[in-house]
Amino acid sequence: MVIRKGEPWGSSGDRPADLTIAADDADAAASVAAGTKMLGVSSGDMFRTVGGSARAGEHQHLPLDFCWVTIDNGPQLPCLSHVVARHRWWQGEAAVIMNAAWLGPLYLGPRAHPNDGLVDVTRGSLPVGQRLQARRRATSGSHVPHPGLTTSRTAAWNGDFERPVPVWIDGVLAARGRKISVEVEPDAVILVT
Image (cartoon, rainbow, N blue to C red; front, side, top):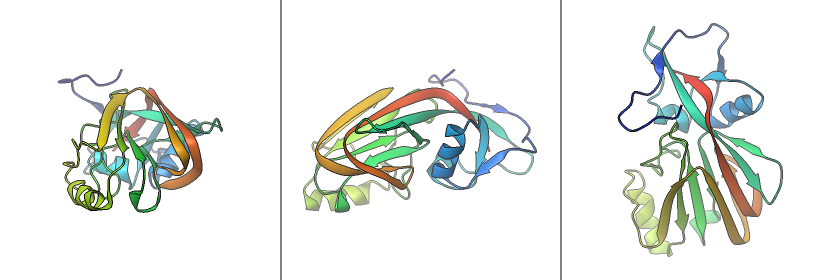
């Protein structure tokens, strides 16, 4: 059951001896796509979003949503934390689809929660000067609202681009495409901290 406002998230539990530990977001996404239902993660943006690892003996079992991404009607690709469709230097139109709150040092999903059944989407195009300002403000999540950016929260997102755009999934370049869709699978995996 996805989290609801005001309700506790996750539960305390033991860390299974045979727990799969993913190195980062992309490794975790590949593990979940291969059928893993419970895992740990040692670094990455989801790791930062949930607060890192627990102290010795204190483990939380946190249900997480998972995303499936399709680029130009290709195969479904797994995603744990985020999808970024952008050109070099963020020129032209870009889209950021966040299940986690963080993208490296940038707090691009200030309202994103990894177990609410939704992704947070920011899409738009900014002139070069405003891109630089937005980049500085993105470390605190204050880059939105902005008149050049639209934001939404949704369980499924479809975006069309005028020309092919590089698409990064969990920090890895997946493909270039014009049509991108992202679908949320609620409660797909348990993250053990």
